[in-house]
Length: 106
Image (cartoon, rainbow, N blue to C red):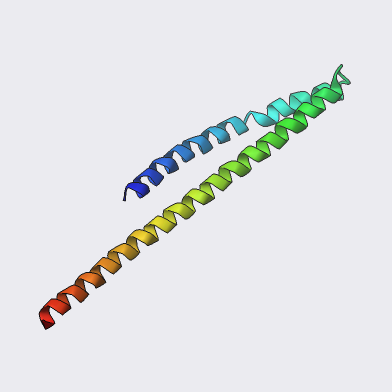
């Protein structure tokens, strides 16, 4: 049960991180557009600006992939421990029934 409580805490933490990612993502197109405008204006250092834009986009994709991976793994862990807890409960009922039947038969 302790593991499920910990998973619940981590789910809340993960949701807060995802909310922050979503709020920060709304600023990303504006920032990238400024970079594209500087490149279009043939600003000094256009190549460096484009490299930085590409780097930001790649890092953002990696961050989203990592967040999705963490969510999937966490949900798999929750599912596993819920099934495990349910199995333990059913096994204990069957074991109790078996012991009770053995006591009655003796």
